[in-house]
Length: 349
Image 1 (spheres, rainbow, N blue to C red):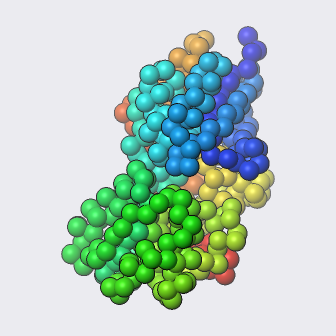
Image 2: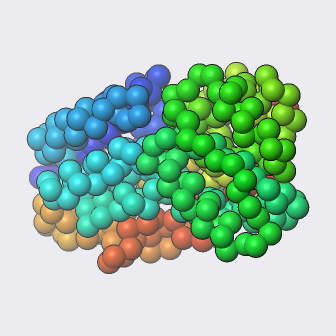
């Protein structure tokens, strides 16, 4: 039987290019593991776009996911925002269809939901707290998105601070994740003269925080979560984040990323390109390792759980990928990298 194996690609916000860049990255990964050749049948990508949270609705995401299920996909790649990952987590468990989301939230994982971590709501705050301590920045003001993403980031930062007697959150406030102006909120956050300002969230409001900091004359320092990955796609935002330190998944010393750069500089040049390439390899390995002769819709999850220690393009050198029973987190090792925006470029610290 040479009918294609269909893999759904669920986007939860507009891609600009219609998803071409991300899907090309998936195909690069599939080609690297020779998925078509080893399966004896082609792997076909079936994209669907939903206007998801926070700007859209959970219903739109569920509807797009249901369309993919009805189309008979063996599995789904997506979504990318934790708020929507929580929604799809429950939907894929009800449907019994395997998904690999690429959000930052461990809360998205479940029996059928696998997770490729583009950042981490739980771990990034600990990385930022360690950096604050190393720089002697003890008193911090926090602005976070008023969403499950922002709220969870703040919760985990509170836990990291509680474990470190040298750090103190002296002010925090929740802001709209789609805010375009936050001058008043920034003014309140810096009025008590903290040692540092921290933004945590999806990233759209990080632009408003930068504009607010400039308007009130706050010179920094400013730290942020992986929201500042937005800078790879929004060049006009980089100047406002000059000197800001943030968490990323891209390391200049990763040998897998270096090898990818020889074939596709565009995909090696940003965290989403690396994620697409890695997820493509995970999908390919999972399909090949699934029970031979079984319907991929029934065996794909078991195939994913058999993947062990595949070198990852994301993270620092030595980061590997794999899954297992009760282990649906893809990346193992030092997957988080501290970087800063300087002179319009992201620089690894």
